Length: 67
Image 1 (tube, rainbow, N blue to C red):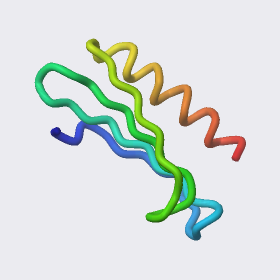
Image 2 (image 1 turned 120 degrees about the vertical axis):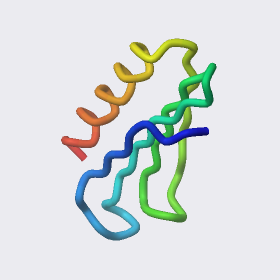
Image 3 (image 1 turned 60 degrees about the vertical axis):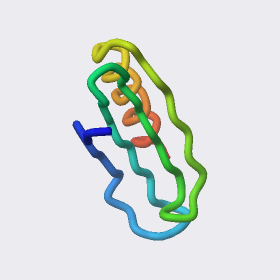
Image 4 (image 1 turned 90 degrees about the horizontal axis):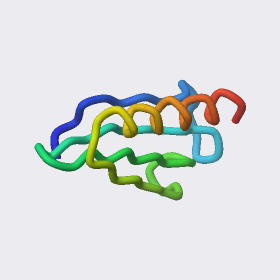
């Protein structure tokens, strides 16, 4: 999958770090989120259209702002 965007909350450390990736393979959009650095918990959401995928990125970024 091709990386189309990457965001993080600017915090270092296992408990504070939050990352979001937007990926595309020519057909499927995937939004991945990770809480807690390299060994943290990950979630991913798949979309067939870019708009809903970017909406999920925005939603996750707003959630991260309060973390």
